[in-house]
Length: 553
Image 1 (cartoon, rainbow, N blue to C red):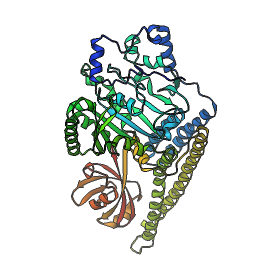
Image 2: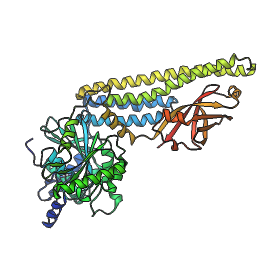
Image 3: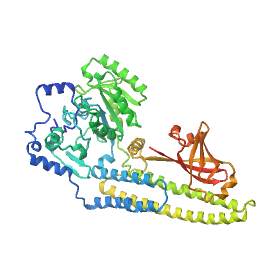
Image 4: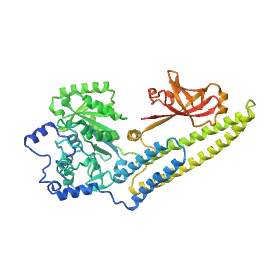
């Protein structure tokens, strides 16, 4: 493909500066001239484009076979295993595996996304994001600066083996599109054909052979806020689109129009809602509009506001995309930041993610197996205790046989789960070799933090396990029908800890010390533990038990 003029391309990326808005409006200019764009001028071509973008993919070949193998292992083998077992996190694990399959699909369509760090550029409408990207990437017309606030499509920019543009729809079909097609994916197309592409396309990828930062993928997101002429906040789906994509990036650059005087409160609230693990770089854009001394005062005030909001930031700088000039203490904060992170990643984290998902699933069996072994030991002690009556010993002997059968069942379930994991890993490794993707054994810190952000939106519940003290008449333990999977509920929380009552033995009291909760789950907000919550208990011996507590998001 020859050098492409990207002026006015990707009208969905609404990010004009105010002067250009005024000029366009005063001249009566339309963001996209329908007579010049064949997809808008010719309804047949427009509908043909729409049909190609919404079609389902006809999949075939080795990659599809391997992808289907992964899907079948999860949808058939794992689901059957989960249904036959009693793993309490089976539903959570299944949701995580489904999300993992989506990430596998993304790696198939765009392998680059799995092997490079992603840096997102966010901000409100007309913050100057597109001008900023054009200048930083050294391509003045790479992205358009359209003036129409539209529901846009997140766009990834990265180095590749060709100069191409691809659109990926929500049905898993990747379509190569030309410049005119990209121009047509806009508000103008929606007005003419009543088709909104944001509900059809999940991303656009712009690949360039000559790219300034070979190891970085830049993500251009829709402005999270609409312009003044969009009054209904409920119609602002850009906010949700922006949030979903910004929170999953490895790094974030946040642009603020310096004319705001500081970082606006709605920007602060939006950034806080992202719950980022990495500090951000904040840029006061269009810094050529005011004297440098005034920009420095704005920077100082912005830092104070960010500190008060407890938002971690690398720095706050002024920047003019028009002049490619930075206003900061060093004068090269932005370039230094990009150069520092322009490092190749350790490889795809798909294998590590899969192993981590199964680690929690397998840990359930390991934990239960060890607990049942301890329970079996407790039963033995009770059987040989001279104080235990003959009738109770008969009951305990029968109970012990059930415990041994449960141990055998758990061992078998663990083995089957491990076999499923090994088959998944084998198919994933074959797929990665076919795609030319390297799989990292241990991800770097940036990758770990990014994965936590990606998984956060899919977490539905969290299960914690704590050691607890069993108090009361402990001779009652011998009367219980079983010592595991005991149901109960929290009856009180205090500065001492959490007090629990067991349904099968309300005379007994269970206590989880607060210091134990803080030590083993430091990230858990103690206030989330409330009276009435259900628990499951496993009695380890006559004075100790283990409590499983599930907190729903």
